Length: 202
Image (cartoon, rainbow, N blue to C red; front, side, top):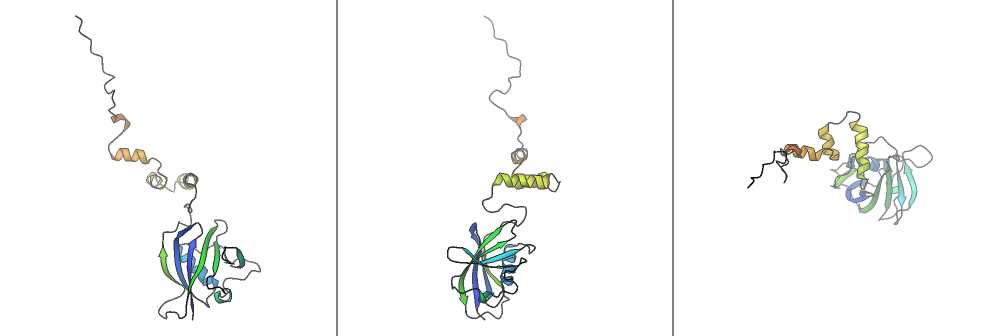
């Protein structure tokens, strides 16, 4: 059985990508599960594939949502792929809007009998966490505020964790570790609180 070799990467960061091999007669459901597994995401949300052209315009949709669109579990890959350089857009969790680009980079004539497919053949880069983390390019201050309000105020994080995640209090912690404090600041005018010495009169 022929294999499709796909390069799958985040739409907003192509330096984090996966090479996934799938049998041509496997379904979009198989590819869907392999993508989520490859980036450490759960499988609790709706998703859709969109067959695309070279300019990434969305075409035919294959989904796991309710409705009259073709369903992933029933749609075989070889029934939809007719371009040796096929491009596919993939969206997971429509509220969070995780978007991936998928490119067909090769077709292998014969599968390896010793490998279970889909197969994650190569992983490059560390993906963002699915929950409680910023996406690529997300505003840092907004993420920090969100982290504090959702976690600190609920008592779910310690002060040490807060320093690690958002840097709050980091300077103070560093000073304490180095044995420094404001009280120990020996400036140019140290000793100004002492009584002045009277000048000798001639």
